[in-house]
Structures are given as C-alpha cells and as structure tokens.
Picture (tube, rainbow, N blue to C red):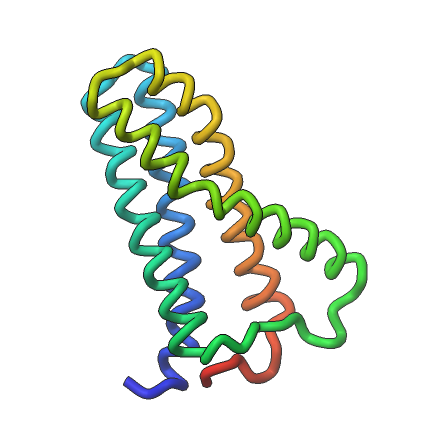
Length: 155
C-alpha cells in the first residue's frame, strides 16, 4: 500500500480505535456498577487490547508513515481553537504516558483477584484512561477533520 493511502487511512483508524476504547471503558464501568464482574472483566480486557492496537497503529503512523514529521494545524486555525487544542493535546500527551503502566497494574490486581488494590488502582486509572481516550478523539476531530493541513506528512 502506498504512503498516500496509509497517510489518509491511519488517522481515521486510530480515532476509531480510540472511540471504541472509550465505549468499552464506559461499558466496563457500567457493568461493574451493576455487579456483573465477569462481563466487566471481559470488556475491560477488550478495552486494553483495543488500546494496545491503537498504540501500535499510532506509533507506526507517526514513526514509519510520517517519518516522524508532526502533523500541524492549518495556519488559518483561529486562536479560539488553537489555544484550547494545545491545552487538550498537552494534557492528553502527559496523561497518555501513564496509561499503559496504570492499566497493566490495575488489570494485574484484578486478575489476581486482589479486589482492594484493584479498586484503588481503578479509581486512578479509569478517569485518566477515559480522559486520554476521549481527548484523543477530540484531537483527531480538530486536527484531521476541522483544521487539517492541506497535505498530511507521509502522503
């Protein structure tokens, strides 16, 4: 597949994986609130798998497809969008760094049936993971749909 096609497909694939992870996270939270532990476990593990696929796809796109060249907002993006976008992006990046470690720790305690530790970790992990998933979709909408550059790196 040529780089033009990859440069166009990957952002949409990545956003779709992020959106699916968001839906699975919220579903898992609802399931545990309803006491459906096995369903919660299955959905949260699925969310972890989807998030892992997202991370692999995201890294491949930004390292291989774009050659490490950043995707930038169009020059005509209004400051009323630009400044909130950078705040969301910065907070997203900082918190995203912690998600794999937090998710693995939370899952580990859950699989070992260490409920108290699992709950403690989940109270921290869930809101961060959810924020990162939601803001990932917001960044995609702003960067690739509303204010996409005329030419994407790698295309």
